[in-house]
Structure formats: structure tokens, C-alpha cells
Length: 295
Length: 276
Image (tube, rainbow over all chains, first blue to last red; front, side, top):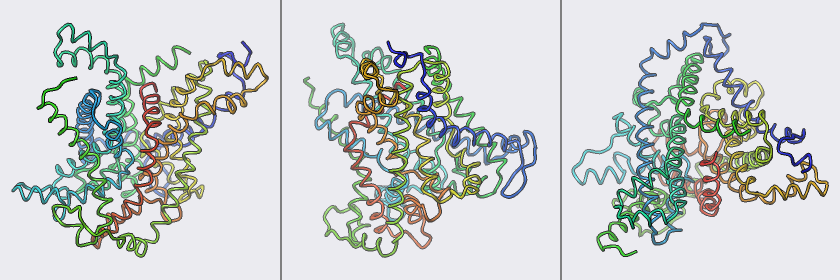
């Protein structure tokens, strides 16, 4: 084996080829985040010199009812969205795996929302749900049911945000589960059938355990991404009425760019970073094992 | 497999419901963009109407800025896609071929840093970008969009390069090729599929992104999704027909792109997400 081909020998060129990725991450994400940490320990605003205040910003954030409102909203929305996507994505993956007509066309159709921007999706859903002209509201009225007042009733606003988010991200969850389901060898089910296992028992004893890694990936990724949700909320309710439908990212945006409370916003930012890391601990553990222990 | 009739009917209904859920909102908006104003609000929605381009004419006349921002979206998207694919390919190659504790540490860092929510970095970047006079430029969006996809891009390309036999590198090295020329002449051509997969992800993200564009651009580099949101929030009432025309123009190119490239999208997702 030549020196260059030895996996343990690094040529300076190898390092040079890793530098661009690392430089982008350090300059645009890592250093700014460290600066945010410093900002979170200071009182600061536009054009005002920062003043060190220790943990006061954190105390202020944690005693702000709007923060807790945003926190609870985030917790509600991500749990509804992630588990609804998992249930629907799983049902669809299993249905598709049994062999369906027009499989290719159906997959294209299911994939379509992945291509749609949050803004365009909001246009669609606002049109369908508009209290006076929307077809959903008109259908509800025709059936004698109350309409969805998403700009007035906070619970309705959050429900619309959940529906919109599920619509946008279901393709991701579905694809991960479907690819994993297709990878299960058919003889596993064949053997179970010969042993007389019912479809339900096959699901519990074969499908779920074998799919578990894919389920964890889908759930984890969606938790982390749903946790930072901004556009859906900003474009549907703007966090209103009266800041009642804010999620954490919207709360942070309002504190920073509307109220110029950079210290408060930074403390919120670091609480969000900590939250993301906590959510990702199982993933980081397995990643650590794979990247660092076999090195 | 033989199935009882009731099961066949149930399965058919489930498939119809899935197709309806996924496609109806898109079809409705695209269809409505060709409807004359009086037909847009007809309930239940009519599929028989005389198609017209008057909404597109209205868009052209009243929102001339929209087409310029569409150009900005294209510039930013192509720039971010090219940058992310190139740097991810280089790093993916090294991570696939080399074992080294520092390298492994940097791979861990690469994924770890990606956990930081984008809204967090806007706080310090906002004044910094202003000081560097980068606000409202294409460049700042290109850098931000590429950065938020290089971690996943590198993992996807590492998975693709892992499948290229090392003997090919070895053979080229025996012929006297250096690191760069092995990468350029052996690895790159063979990982084209992976690069397309990464490209699709970045392209869709950059074309549709809202938050960074909202914070860092105001006019010169403003992207199309921002104009859509302005039209949605117009104080003097929403002009639905014109809004549908703009939405259609914004979504059709990327929708076609995703449908054409779906093979790569699925390959990339399975390589990057499940293994990354």
C-alpha cells in the first residue's frame, strides 16, 4: 500500500479539503453561537455598550410568562406533529410496501409537499381555511359545525400550524420508514406466517423491532427540526393574537428584533441550544460511538 | 396475494385519501391561478372554467418586483448549491478514506454544530453582517444556506464515496496521481449520484427558505418567498388571483425538479439520514 493510500496517513492536501466545511461551520454557526453565549450574560441592545449582568437575563427569561407560553406551545406543537407524522408515515409505509397500483406515481404525489415552501403552503392553507371564503369553513358551516377561527382562537391557530407542518414534513418521515420497510427481507414474514403469526403479531414482533433504528432517526430529526419552527407560525398567526401562539423561535425573534432585548433573546437562544442538545443526546451517543471509537 | 373485496375497497379509499391530502392543496392553487376572479371563490370549487392569464398579467403589472426577486432566488440557490456540493464532496472524500482521531473529532463537531437552531445565529450575525456591508447581498444568503447543509451533505457524500472501491484510488496512486487528482479524476465522476442528491436538498432548501432571507435582505437581494409573504399579508385585502399566480410561478420549477430528481432524493435520504 502506498503512503497516500494508507488510511492513517494524512497528506496536507487532505486537511486542506476538510477546511472549507469546517471553516463555514465555525465562522457562521460556532463562533456566532459562542458570542451569543457572551451576549446572554450581558445587558445589550442596538448601539448600546454591553454591560455584564451574570445570569440575570436567564432569570428574567425564566420568569417571563410569554416565554413559558412559547415553551408550552412549542412542546404541544412538536409532540403533536412528530407523533402524528410517525403514525401516518408508518401506516403509509406499510400500505405502500404491500404492493399498490401506480406505485411510482403515488410516491411522486406523496413526495410533492416536500418541494413546497412554507410560504406557498401557508397561501394554500389560508385560502382553504379562510373564515369567510375558505372551502373548509364553508363545508363546516354547511354541515352546521362551528368554523375554524385560526386568527382569533389560539387553539385553532396552533391546530392549523400543526396541520400545515405535518403536511410539509410527512414526505420525509414516510420516505425514511418506507425505505427501511423495503429493506426487511420477505422471508422473515414468510417464516412468521408459517408459524401461524397473525398480522398484528408480525407487526409487533418483526416490523417494529426491525424498523426501530429508522423510527428513532425519523422521530429525532423531526423533534430537532420542529423545535426550531419559525416560518409556519410567523406566517400563519404571527404569534398572535396577543402573543398567545408564539413558539420559542418566534419569541426569540420578537425579543431581539421588535423589543431590541438582545440579552433576553440571547439567553432564549442558549436555552434553545441546550434544548436541542438534550433532545439529540441519544443520537449524539450513537454518533460518538461511530465517529470516535472506530477512529 | 388474494384479498377479500372489502379490504380492496378500504385500501383503494386509503390511497385516494393519501393522494388527495398531498396533492389537493397544490392542485387547487395552480388551478385557481388560471381562473377568472369570479370563479375563484365558487364553492364547491369548479374544475370547469375558461382558463385565463389575467392573474399573471395582474402579477406582472402590480408586482413587477416579483420577477426580479425570482431572479435573486435563482442566483442565491445556484450559488449555495454549487458551494455546498463542492465543499461537501471534498470533505466527504477525506472522511471516507482517512482514519484519524482529530478528523473523527471534527466529524463529530460537524454534526454537533448543526444542532444549533438557525434563529440563534441571526442575533450576532445581524450586526456583524451590517458592519461587513454584507446585508442585503446574495453572498450572505449563499454562505448561510450552504453552511446549514454542509454537515448533511458531507455525511451523504461520505456514504457514497464509501461504496467506491479503494482499489481504484490505489491504482491511480500507483500511476503517480496525487491526492487532488485522485479526488478529481476518480472520486468525483463516480460520486455524481451523491452530488446530485446533495444538490437537490440544498436547492429545495435555498429556493424556499424564509427566515434568513427575511432577516438579512431588504431589497437588492430579496428573494421570492418574501414577496409571497408580503402579498399574503397585504393590509388592503389579499388579491387571491394574483397571489395564486405568484405562488404557482414560485413552486412549479422546484416541484418539477424534485419529481425529476426523486430517485436521488430517496438515495440521499437513506444514505445521509439513516447512516449520518
